[in-house]
Length: 190
Image (tube, rainbow, N blue to C red; front, side, top):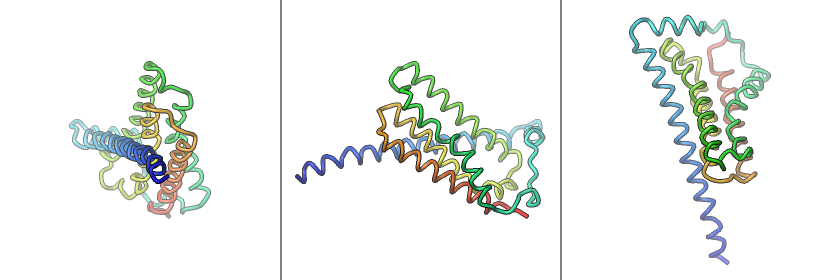
């Protein structure tokens, strides 16, 4: 009986290690792209930072940020959760089964990662350390984004159970809710 219990635990441990590796890979990739965009804008000659500031048009003053409110937290979390969670649906569609579909899904996930992290990195490069006070949620937000992308990395190798997918989704929702709380309460506001 003990041997059966132990053998049942091994696959779940292996799956936990696989999930951790996928999440770490995705989190590292998101930060690498963010920091490369940051460095590119900050170090580029020819006024690239000025062009990015003109395009983004951020006003980094507390007067433009409303005080923290629960409805604002809910709106931010509701906005960010689908952006982070959609890759978990790719496995439900069976895109991991066919080589072409898997490659197309990989391209979509990569495009999503670039679309989310490059503008943030460019803003960090353009505004420098002044922006840091306005993005304290970023490590948690990127963690939630990495959960969605990491979930796809797991699914592209094997089928994910409904329970497993629900756990990944719950973690994405939790991360986005925590990021929204931090964003609404920790940024300078009036």
